[in-house]
Structure formats: C-alpha cells, structure tokens
Image (cartoon, rainbow, N blue to C red; front, side, top):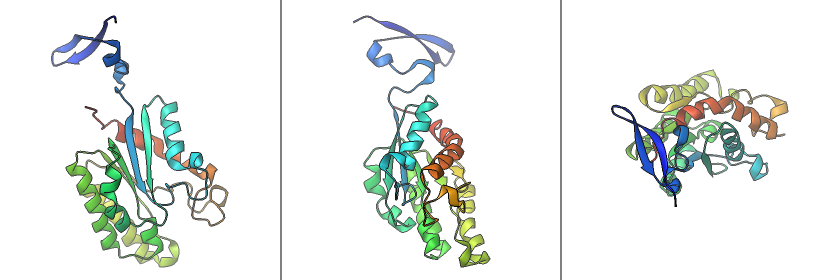
Length: 221
C-alpha cells in the first residue's frame, strides 16, 4: 500500500503529514474522517408524522446538507406527541446513538396543551445542561404557542426560548422551527399543524444555514 502526503496546519503554519490513504481519506479540504452524526430530539414535526419516512425533516435535512458537501448522518429521535418532559425523560436513550451534535426541537406539544412555561423552560434547561456536560454542540429550535391561548401566554411561552438563547450563549439558536410554514395552508397537512412535503422542504431551506453553523462547531476525534 502506497503512502500519501497531506498538508496539515500546525502551530507554526503548514506542515507535512504522512499517512496511509485509509487514514487520510476525507481529511482533504477540512472534511471530517467520517460523517458527523446529527441527532434531532423532537416530536411529530420531526418524526415525519403523516409522511413517508423519506419525506420527513431528518431525511430531507440530511439530503440538503449532503448536497452542500456536508458529510452528515441525521438521526431521527422524534416521537409523536412528545413534550419537553418526554424528551427530557428519554434523552439518555437518545444519546445512546452517540451523536456528535444535537438539535433540540421540542415544545410544540407543550404549547398545544397550555403547559406552564416555567416547566417547559426547566425541561429544556435540563436537556441543554446534559448536552453541555457531554460536550455536545447543540442547536435549540424555538416554538410559538397557538394564538387561541391568548397573547399573554404566547409572549410568556416564546420568552422561554428567548431566555434560554441568552443563557446558553454557546447553543446555536433558531427562533422558530416552523418559520415560513406555520399558518400556510399550502404547506401543511389538512390538520394545519404538521407540514406536508412542500412544508418540510421550506423548513429545510430556511434552517439549513443555521444547522451548518452547528456542524461547524463539531470537532471529531
């Protein structure tokens, strides 16, 4: 087996590194040696509710990232009906997938059920604290409450995510998971809650740049 010379960056500039093709594969132009494992901890919005699995957010996001040259495997950890409490309870189970980064996309069901915002905040804090302790880069996707619960509740609920984004400065923040899709009949299934395939594509289009910011924080061993 022949040898391959690579350029690597050392403390004093560029240095020559010697390695075999197997070790060097994927290191050119800053690419990782293996795909980044990106886990999405979510609910029915991320679990492809009402859609074929290949039409759901995890699959379409992975395809979009790969189209941009990103080596990434998106792991679907969405459970329909899950609340932030449910996500908190099953976090350890989800982390058994050994992700390199995590998107936290919970809160929709809290809002639909009129959950106390302080409880939602406590659950999300516990999730983010666990990820921080594991040195896992995280992205928090915000959520809005249904308007029928009143303006005061809506402001308090939205404030949960805004407060967390300030408290956890290292966490990438995407203000609203359903940005550009919520309330748009043409982008949602008949229930007007879950995105249809076109809605998923719009979600992916809008959130991909923020997800790339998250991926840039990953440092593979």
